[in-house]
Length: 423
Image (cartoon, rainbow, N blue to C red; front, side):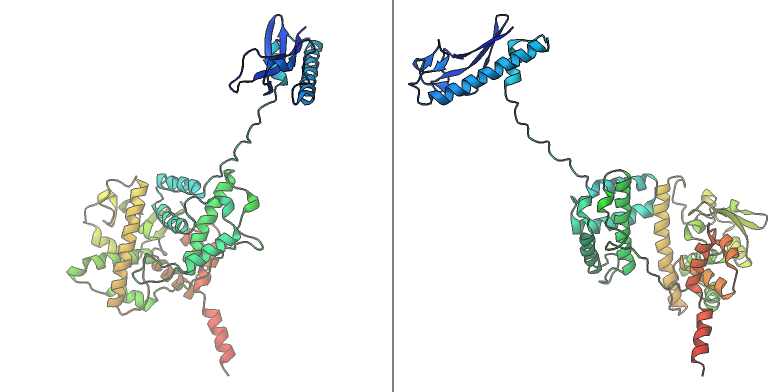
């Protein structure tokens, strides 16, 4: 069984005093417990009584402290003996020594919004989604101008987003030559990008649902305002179709042709028109799978389209494409390069169509997507059943078709207005 007693050290410490503490011995091997107490001279120590002599200025206090510590050591020895543990004098001393106070671990570092955003951009680029990568990168650039790059998700509160909305509405559109503020739809798209990334962070366990600032009462509601969709009417399309371009206007001629292809093929999207292949035409019909949703289908070939196809029949067939806008690409398998080129060509065709509208003295936007609006407007005027249009548009839900066509449905409202004011 170990023994313990109060002792003084025989050598002076760095302050010239003699340390005083507890010596524990087990099997002849000692260990010492010194806790900073010392006496100026060994003459103040009574080794027989194992206590500080009364000549010491703090004899009573120091003796009481050492006696209490000795008692604590003896209790620990009994505890070890009772538990029948194999122990050493060092084990006893270590069990008595006060445990060092450990500083609390630093709070976990909150994930940055930018970390999630950067990962999103990398994924979109890897997937070849050029349009998404480009637009989201631009929107995030504005967000960092407002919030900085070290903003965390808990900081993106309702009030934070309200201030961000004000910032956006007073911001200038860098994509316009004139100093024009961002449109309401652009502001909505910027907020939508933040919401998408916040949802992604919640799914990944990087943000809490409790702090979610979107939706519900007293939170940020994202609403998509309706915009007026105006397409070219029949007479305007005939003017466009019949206009004769000079040789110097060949670029306008080709842009007009692809716009007409989009219109006559039920408002085909420009991406699908640019990817139009000769092999898509079989047995007098046009077969293609819509790139946006992967829906297959076929349509008859209108005479106006047959005439346009005849014009390109003897052209070099790069990648088997009808139109040559994508011939600069080595192949069509690099989705990112493909989408980047399509984006550039779409913008170019839009610029050409703006020039053509000036030539025709038509004060309307005739961008490639407006060909889809023109078809929808004509379909509404001809009262084509939504179920038929659903198949032509390749919509999965009839509600999508009905919602889209509602943008062009004016007949009943016009008749109602006339009925009310006709007196």
